[in-house]
Image (cartoon, rainbow, N blue to C red; front, side, top):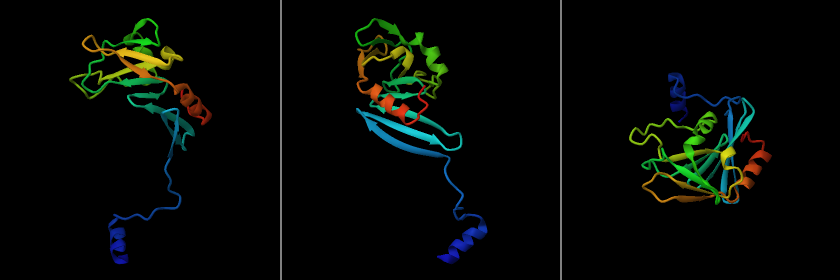
Length: 162
């Protein structure tokens, strides 16, 4: 075995781990109120970023992303916060894009990729977000109960959650 390692080292295929090597990112997870928080600490920049997720909902960089499935066209989605008026998702798309929401996908058949992006500033403290992806579908209700607790925990852990 030692001979094989020596041969690999001579060929440059084996590099013993240097004691100064370390990863620049450290990832930790937490769970609160049905939400999963992934905290990623970049040791190089000393920035901590977070993603907060629950089934079909993800939050990061100030944007909530609601997932309908890759084949669902959400280009003309409308939404309602709690029992409020119906609003158009594309009215807040520029803000969501400015915060980093991805609107450019590899899905050429459905560029929306089945996602609706709403900035947290538009959602506020709503407990339920109802979204109708398109006129051929019934609306779907996304429960945000406990999200504010998860967001507060992320802030307490020094996450840059915007």
